Each structure stands twice: as structure tokens, then as C-alpha cells.
Image 1: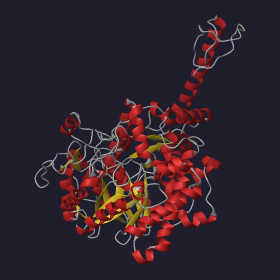
Image 2 (image 1 turned 180 degrees about the horizontal axis):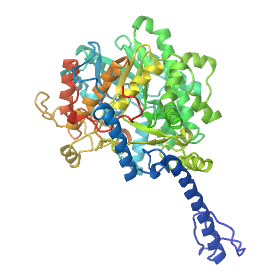
Image 3 (image 1 turned 135 degrees about the horizontal axis):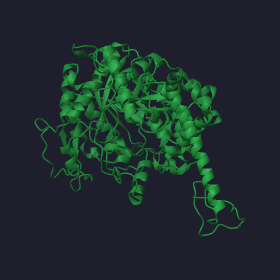
Image 4 (image 1 turned 60 degrees about the vertical axis):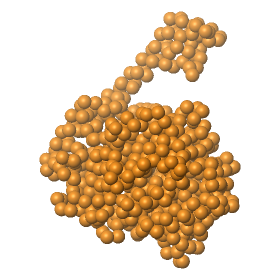
Length: 627
């Protein structure tokens, strides 16, 4: 709140009739106090205008950038016009908008390509208090938020009730022709206290699911940790913010149990899903844990513990199980693809690389090279933990394949060049952005072309298929994973007006358990729920995968997010990513148009290039090489 300023008259205490200014509160309404306050405000405003003008002049030289963008605010009509002109130049160079495919021919994929779909335990299983399961941090968070009226006010207590419907869900997968299914194990269902005895009922559930998949010719791909940390570990010693060795040992124990119980049938393991998102959640104060050292330190501490836990799980698998089980193990990293608009600008190229280092490289560099990117070391100093020599050895090369989740792309621009402008940018970034201290540390302005099409429902993310293609090529060239790249998540939250109307009906967002005694009528052969925008999205992004393969990226599989509509974390059930619609009131499953399209792609082993009318507007910038 406002702080008291000394009065120009020398009054000792602030009074109830004090005036308020941008700088604080004085104790009276005297002319000298008011004048001094407004002179100070005027000086600050003048400084801001001077800085903004300096940066405006600098960036105005680039025809793509308008003054509003350069000053770090929202886009403007000038920006839209400049972007359109740039796209026209790019369109002239390649004869049209961004085309991720290689040409008009059928886009064939290899026979052994892993066509799959993905889910996560907390998002679909339900049965939160059944079968010996104990709470996770997400149970704690969502139940607390019900009373505090934060976020969606939804819980995953029932979700899709996959715990009771998993055999039916596997039948749907088989009908679609899926070759693989990626799911996660609920740590607190398998080991309720996180680091102790096994819950045999939980182990039986996952064993039955794996057997059902294999019986239907579907390969299980298992994620060990998809954000649902057992509450017992978090409450007991702070979880990933607690003693490093204790957390690493707990994860090693959990991983060993999974390998022992399921490794005879599971040959593809993923240690962590999107550690970047989980680490940043410790900055925004979701409810776990109590902050330890603040938003400028805690995310980096958590990320460090996550990486060491990953390394321990990989060590356990390779030392104790790989020789007899013969599987592969890796990590799943989410990243946007961030690139410079002006490839001839050293500052913009450096900004793009810095943005990618702070997201993709934060986890990929330690896993493949043994340490954090230099940009992070230089920016963070002693706030970024150090790896010991042994830890570096354990981390280096600790992923057989590169699992990547991607949903959108963006442009990167450097912060204002002036010293004052840069200082203001970093401080405003720290306090006025969702990423806070992390955004300030990264020191890059992220912008999207306003003419890019967006997912119009749910996420609102921009759709940039050529960015997806270029990200896959970048991963191949920079990291060269020995067993290739696997797209472990990609999808969209498009829904129709009909879907939105149904979701407004009473009870639509309040999942109920499946009633086997009175099941809903389901016709998976003939009933189809329309979602044409998702079909269009899939055509473009599968074409981008094919194009990346043609450019040398060794992509071995594609897992669509998601098989089912599900609990989308803080958004609850309001966002639908599934290719199978779930009526949460009855747990009825209805195949969407996109599910039938995807089934046909799998059956044919590829797809035709998207027709011209379905291509997304927005081409690569004119001075970025068109592959």
C-alpha cells in the first residue's frame, strides 16, 4: 500500500485527510506537498516518455515493428499492416502462405512409426479416493481452490472415470487403430506415502491396463511423473524444494518399483513430463509449497531437483533393468519455438537463442550435454544451482530419445537498448507478467504476429505449423538424440458452437461416476461429433512432421493430445483437447470427426497434403530461409 511521506510543513504524523499520489501518501493537503508529489510524478512520466521514444526510434527502423510493439506494449494497427507487408514478401518468395508439406504427393510415414494418443493419470483417472490412492499436490490445490473460488473451481475427483472405464477406452483406441498409448502412473496411487510400501490395488490397476493394451496390439508408453507429486512428500519435507538427496532417493525408489512391476511389458519409459511447467509453478504460488527463497530462486531449485531425479531414474533403469528388459528411457520437454523475425539482426537472433535456451535448453542441455546453457549461467549467477562432476556425468546422455511437446511459436525481440529502458523492462516484467522473475531473467520480449490464426476456443494459442516443423529440425541438429525424436504431445482445444452450448447445460462441468448398471447409449461405429477445425489443425501439423522428417529430423512417433476430453489443470473441464468427446454427466464417449480422420491417417500410413484453402495464414519471415 502507499507509504507515508514527510510533510512539507513538518507535520509529524500522516493524517486521515492525506492526499494520495503515485509515490505515496502525505499527511495534509498543503500546496507544497501537492506540488512536490505532482512534480515527482511528472519527472517519472517524462523519463518513461524519453525511454520509450529512444526505443521507438531504434526499433522503428525495422518495418515489421511499430512503436507500440517496440515500447513493449500490445500490438497495433501499424504492426498488423507491417506484418501483412512482410507476409506478402514471404508469400511472393514461396508462392503462397506457409506450407509445411513437401509437395502435392501423398505424405507417407514409415511402417514402424508410432501413431499414438496421450493422457495423464490425474487428468482422466478419477477414483481419487478409491483403490488405496492417497492425495497429490493437485488434489490439495484444487480442493483448496473450491473454497477460495480460484481458477476453475473444478477437481479431478471423478474426471473421465478412466479408472472404471479403462477397458472401454482401450476398445476405442483399438477401433482407431492406435499403435501406441502414452499414459502416466499416479505416484500416490502406486505408493501412497511416496516413499514406502506399494499399494497392491494400485499396482493391479496399472498392470491390468498394460495387459489390456497389449492384448489389443497397442504399445504402452509410460510417463513416471506428470506433475502429481504425492502430498505426503510435499507436506513431509517440501518435495522438490526439500533436501535434494531425499527427493532424488524417493523418485529413485518409485521408479524402481515401476520398472520391477511393469518393465517386463513396458519398453518405452518417460521420466518427467514438462518439467519446465512444473518448475515455474513454484513461482506463481499455486498452493504447493510454501515459498522457500522466492520466485527468483525456487523455480531453479525445483528444476535442479527434477533433473537430478530424472538422472537417478535413468541410472536405476540402465544399471538394474535394461539388460533384461531391453527398453528405452527418455524425458519429455515442452517448448514453444521462438525465432527472430529479422535473421540479419544480431540482436534479434541472440534474443531468439536466449529465449530457447531459457525454455528448451534449461532441461535439454543438462540431459544431453551435462550442464545448463551459458546464457542461464551468466544471467542467474549463484541463483542457478551447480551440478557436481558426478551429477554432470549422470545427466549427460541420459535420454535415449527426445520427447517434445509443442503447441505454438512466437517471435523474439531484445529488450530496450537504453540502460534505463532495459532496467524498466526487467522490473516491469518481474511484477506485471505471469512468469515474473523468470521473464525478467530471460530478458526477451516475446511477440506473436497478430495475423496468425488462433485456436478460437479454449487456449487461444496461435497456430504456426511451420514453426513446429522448424523446431523439430532444430532439435535434431542441436541434440541429435540417439533414438530419435518423438512428438509426445501436440493438439488443440477447438470446439464448435454446438459443443459450447452443450457445456452450458446444467451439470455439464460436474463429472459423475460411470454407472455400469445404467450405461449411456454409445455408438462408436456411426455416431460422430463434429470438430472440423481440429481436423484442419491435424492436417497441417502432421504435414509439418512429415516436412521435418524430409529435412533430416529422425521423428519416430506422434502422440496426439489428447485421446479424451479431460481435466485441464487450472482450466478444469472448460477446455476440450480430446478427439473423443466426454459427456461428464454420464461418462458417455463419442468419437469426434478428428478421431475418424486420425484413424484414417493411421490406416493409410500417412495423409494427403492440406488443400490450399486449409493452409494457415502466416509465412516464415522474408529473410528466414524457406526450407
